[in-house]
Amino acid sequence: MTSATGAPAAPARASRLGRGLLALLIALATIATFLPALSNGFVGWDDTMSLVDNPHYRGLGWAQLKWMFTTFHMGLYMPLSWLTLGLDSLVWGINPLGYHLTSVLLHAATAIAFYFLGLRLLQLALPSAAERDLRLGAVAAALFWAVHPLRVESVAWASERRDVLSGLFYVSAVIAYLEAAAAGGRRPGRWYWASVGLFVGALLSKSITVTLPVALLVLDVYPLRRLGPGRWLDRRVCLEKLPFLALAATAAVLAFVANSHIGNRASWQELGFLPRLVLTAHGLAFYMLKTLLPLNLSPFYPLDLHVTWMHFGFVIGATVLAVMLARPWPAFTAVWIVYVATLLPVLGFFQNGPQAAADRYTYLGSMGWSLLAGAAVAWRWAGSSVLRALLVLWLCGLAWLSWQQTEVWRDSITLWTQAVRVNSQSRAAHFNLAAAYEHAGHYAEALAEYEEVRRLSPRQPRWYVPIGRMYERVGAEQTALAMYARALAGDPGLPEACEAARRLADRLKVSPPELATCPTRRS
Image 1 (tube, helix red, strand yellow):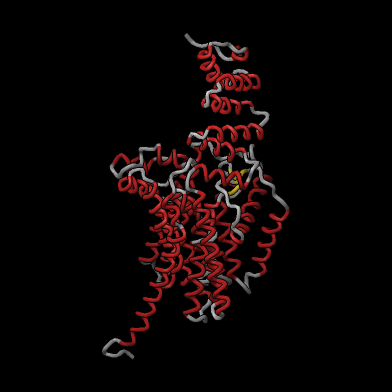
Image 2 (cartoon, helix red, strand yellow; image 1 turned 135 degrees about the horizontal axis):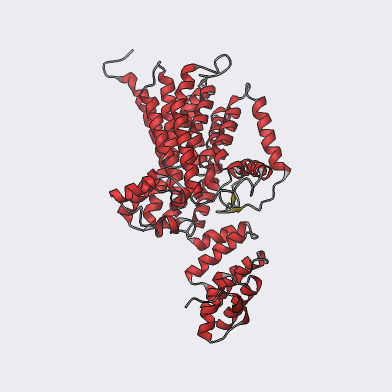
């Protein structure tokens, strides 16, 4: 029944208002968590080459747009991410505040979208649960994901704009797909094509989103139940995936071509099947462990890691559990499959770069676990005031850790100091910290770090060159020349040592015998 005054519509309006207020709460909590990012600068970890010293993206003219849509700069194809950075440059110039503000706002928008996605999925998975419980579960899922310390790298690192932008497109594409599935119909409707279009946006922001078709197929099985026993090959549902698969394949090819330009991917001769298998097992276990206990996070986890049978045990155990629970608890099975599929492009089998893992890779991969946590809250926690209080404390603890981790990204020195603190045996971390100190004019500190790099690389005499450069900068020229000579003694004819030693020897009017190993100067 509907009254002339429209009173029966009031509960629906109140429901929409409640959802809107909860979405606003999530956005405010997310922004508050990452406020320290607004005072951060650019860091010497891609920001220099991507933003500070790169004039090509600055602006939205034809020349800039052409560059954005055709470049493979630094091995990446991400034209829409460049587009947002170009817009930042128009508004803010090269002021890092604006770049960080945009990233924080995009992340907050993704958190809101994830809340609505979580609410819809929880409604499908727990149809008998009360609306209040479902909302609390969706809020918990969104906040657990949004304020988790593993998000910091994606949000606080200006060069990782591609994470927050692609994440917004990715989540929105899933929401549109769920709406299309709910609408039914024999032909794809506007929601379906909206999902395809949003997937294009995700792919043009970051190629890691190529795994979305797998997530959609899993959703078709659970909780949508459009596929399953007796209807695994439903023609209409399977044909729906063809545009997604075609787009994913195209993006994968583009990503491979882009990466091949910088030669950053290890060949199968350099990294064989077994090491890749070990790295894959390590990654799956590592990201899960850091999700549960997000301590000692670092911008760089070196490849010289120690993998134990625990990592393999975790992967095997979780896979067996997923198979065993496929019928009684399909949610866990669905989350595990999506987790593995989403991370697969950045695991050991597709090893790219010198790192064994990276916090940013969890931006999409951890969403399933967040939804599972939200389902637990809606199912068991919502009715207990004690458990709700524990939930609030838990989320506040995560936000506090994220606040601290965001400050790590304040500048290059704080960033690489953290990397050295987490892994004191990382040569790359010490080298980057030394370079940061040198750039800031802290030569004594830079010298100490370069000495540590040399200690960690005793068979590479080239590290005597930056050590000599530091001595030269503080005026100890004789000591500097001795360092260059030691580099040449260990590696005769080393070009950078020859150049530095010859320049300094000319100024000091001396001729160390090690210079004899250097090529003769051209007249």
